[in-house]
Image (cartoon, rainbow, N blue to C red; front, side):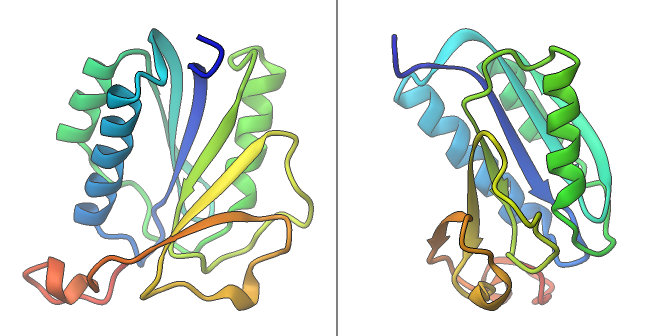
Length: 164
């Protein structure tokens, strides 16, 4: 019980380098881990933000079934540049409005190229990057990250695009 999550935020970088297939794959893996490990309570407060240079969408999910539906019907909103700051500002506003009472953390799915806040947020934040796109030069010291080895998109998508 002590390790179970009641609240979580997931931020998806929907900049021009985003590709739906990898985003769906990330969300499916995240959902599977949360379900398999029974990390969520039966009803929970999950906000999935889509953000490029601004927050494009904020979808609230309250059950694993809703999470499955979200993944099945995912439409990517955005396509501009990448600024991570608006997502953090939006999460801070959700906290201020009481929509998050005990936020345990934020998962940020991105290629890692963008504008980071200058200081660490007051909640745990982990950035998930892909090795074939990851660039440590612009990543501040406070960033906790996981770098995943996945095939380059040309191997994943039929169009051979250069998206992450």
